[in-house]
Amino acid sequence: MSLRTILAGAALAAGLTSGAVADGHEPLTVGFVYVGPVGDGGWTYEHDQGRLAVEEAFGEKVETVFVENVPEGPDSERVMTQMALQGADLIFTTSFGYMDPTINVAAKFPDVKFEHATGYKQADNVSVYSARFYEGRAVQGHIAGNITESNIVGYIASFPIPEVIRGINAAYLHAAAVNPDVEFKIVWVYTWFDPAKEAEAANVLIEQGADVVLQHTDSTAPQAAAQAAGGVYTFGQASDMTEFGPVPRVSSIIDNWAPYYIARTQAVMDGTWESVSTWDGIDTGMVEIGEITDAVPADVKAEALAMVEAMRTGAYHPFTGPINKQDGSVWLAEGEVASDYGDDGLAGMNFYVEGVSGEIPE
Image 1 (tube, helix red, strand yellow):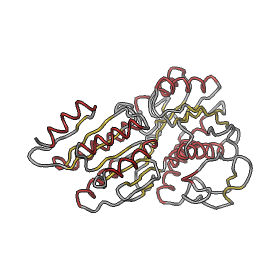
Image 2 (tube, helix red, strand yellow; image 1 turned 90 degrees about the vertical axis):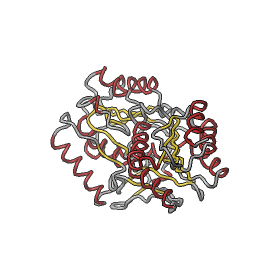
Image 3 (tube, helix red, strand yellow; image 1 turned 60 degrees about the vertical axis):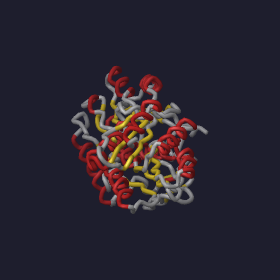
Image 4 (tube, one colour; image 1 turned 180 degrees about the vertical axis):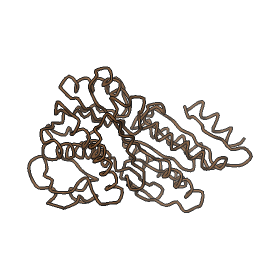
């Protein structure tokens, strides 16, 4: 029985969905585990675009399989185990909460290569990768601080992990830099993808006076809520979400995983794959800024694009002092740039910067 037949039969039983399949030889099998549906229009959609790019790049040399809507926790461990048992050579696990399950399954399958998105635990056969989303949040903050009329910016936050806290801080710092009167209101929804909860959070923020809403969740529900309310600006999250442009969506952060997925697949094919930690941003194109629409004043758009270029060349870092912590203590001195790791490094950020109100939930 061919690998294709085995995988096709197992897919029907396990909920795996197969992409392009090669005939006549054994392709490299690349698996993807998704926390949301491929049609979410955001985070999972862009990871799946990366999967499709792998198929396009390698043709019959690869076969891809994926499972969508996999909850973080024990369910994900079962899905990963099933993928490995079914012959996957390389598995991308694409949500923070898959970290420990990935490590657990990798220990049982030392010949399978694993790539975990946004985590920090590595092993001989486990790499980690993430994007510097906070760079995009800085651009959003600059635009938000300029275009808000109520001086209230809403932020829909998923989980209180460093990645999300970095985004809030980066957006606030750059909004406050151009508008000292700006106030951030934050709603924690404790989900990556739940359109009903996301829409409810957006409506709560709008009722509290927010005329700009940012999000670190995956669906387009906040965009739709803002469109229904009228007079509220939003930003696409993880994907361009252009169907809501030119308003309420005025720009977006786009996660471009395709080059990384292609390179790591090629490394497995070449036998050069090794465990690495990758954290790329605007400079490599892993983070892109979607079109800034004409709803944004021309001078603000020009400033935002200049910031993007400065981050691309390394001339500017969004966390450059002076910056204090929320309690007023000094975090970064004048001209000091935040480190990635170590005490008070960006990777473990667990505090708000000065000016952000409220407490970070446990």
